[in-house]
Image (cartoon, rainbow, N blue to C red; front, side, top):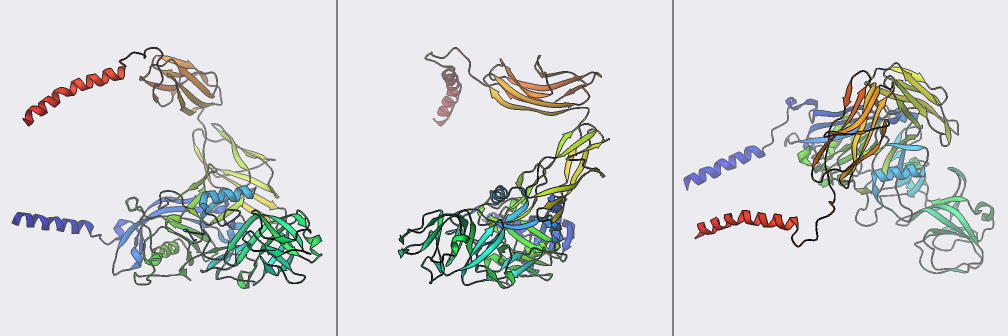
Length: 628
């Protein structure tokens, strides 16, 4: 009994030691502050389009910044920095999807939706935006303005509004009591008119808006009904937003009980609207923001200020009873530097085994401060936290690890966008690179194009440029510089992402891969460079056989293989200088049906089964004998 007690005590002591987390020290990494120690950098100052810079690191952070508890956790975080005044190259846009109602979507798809509806623009970086009603309406909690449209004029939390001069304002917006009918030509306002009534008849000489959520019955005798088809229709409590165009005019309608889906009605007896609301006219109906937020085109909600004039908030686990403040979660935050630069920060959470524990609000603010912010604000987090970036292949990529292990659909996103210059690397040789501007700029033009290759700048002549005298088989940093001129005369001086482009060797295998397996065969694809025509013979080798190739790229089918046998394929290039270049091995097991056979009462599978049964039968007899 004593031995058992001693054993239990030893086990408890071992568990205690295992579960006691030692305090972090500078020996763990580079001390950034008394609350954060950097363990390693994953990405350092990667240049994206428009001067945006990406960093990604792993750090130990002190939970809640509580020095009494002194609990440290590992966190992986990434942040992008957008230049001051957004370099005149980057615009900040709030964006959401959906026509008839509030709708959630993945951040990447929200970014793609923006690009589809705004040709000539591309998203460089994006994060999830406001908190929202995830269980019912998908509506954001706070006021929300999307690219100039006031979808929701008021809300429960503070918001950030992005000004045209590159700055921001913070607070709760106020709005007009009445809706306005705004007639548009493009994005320019032609006129504004007060809307007297919503889903009820207007005052004498007034104007009423009827939307799809109208229910009841009204007498329309004597009224003119301007029928609109909407692109966007939003309901938020007593507030409405509609944007669309006039598609019909009805002077004979006598009553109304329902507005069809996809439409809205503007109802009036005032004949002056006949010239204002002609068929094809673009209109929107909204409550405009007032006060400091008047005219702000992009507004997104926040919850909790993280940094106030350089001071990180919410320190200590007793600061708040709100679990959102003092419990570790994945986080998304936005910060502003002294010079006006913007920082977007995402901290991974919910995956401790991968150094992704999540952070409290204090830890989030501290990492944001260490990135350079003097003011910072918390956006939606947890499974919503997502950062999407445009990679050098031109694809939108999720750069963080969402805590749900997949992208969550969210109510809206914060996008950082720039003009698409339509520039590309058109050819790469062993000692040169060629570049091309491939098309017209939507709503503008492009000028002053140059490309920097390995420290040397080459000006475009017309729509092309060529860098020469490069070293073969070498990697160069490539960045485009250009000016976009908007139709209104405004100029945007821009820089592309920094690309890493490798020159070819004199002869280089670019591609050799399995496309698909065939019946007792394979389809392989290949490509190699040979600018100086050095290749005398090219073939695919397998066993003692070879398949001769006739071009520098293509696909080839090899058949007549033996089922179940493993084949090793190699691309071989024989040069006129006696050199031979070989690819890596593609190892493939041949598959397919063998003709003939079958039809008998005893298939090969049955024979194999019978042999296996015979082999295990003696083991069963031995076991039975031992039991006896």
